[in-house]
Image 1 (spheres, rainbow, N blue to C red):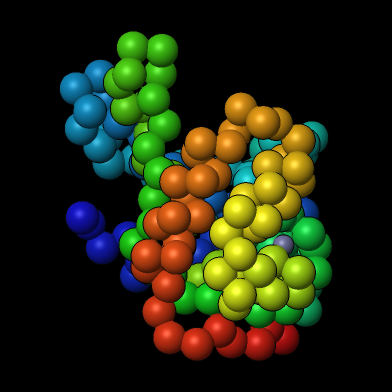
Image 2 (cartoon, rainbow, N blue to C red):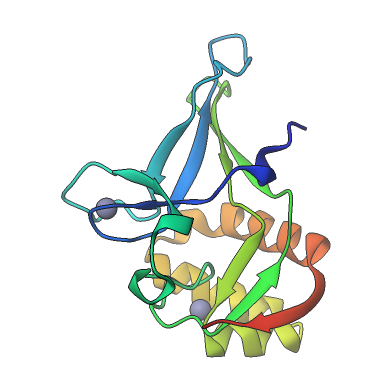
Length: 157
Ligand SMILES: [Zn+2]
Ligand SMILES: [Zn+2]
């Protein structure tokens, strides 16, 4: 894997939301070398304006729980190296989505994580995203998270 994790994480200059990084691939499944940033939620009315998170004051950052999208995450977990692949209708990889090293969790999700209540965590995430079709993808993502989770959680803010 390429060493994406060393790149600064980006936030949107317009709404201060953290942005996900996409690595588009060509038809042969090779990375195009481009990097694209997108909002984590589709419910935005503007194009992302990527800016390095380090240029924002922490208090201005509009962080969201990486599990349920709650806007009040209080814990940060380190789980490096997780990405997901998106496929088109012909099962061709169209992009890779890199989630960065640090995962924010709200109080409730952190509680479920600490207790290893994965089923409840997954139910909560699926409900938060409002689309049962996302369940397999979220389940795989959570499984990767538990596998990659390193060290102790850290208090945010
Ligand atoms: Zn924005
Ligand atoms: Zn949460």
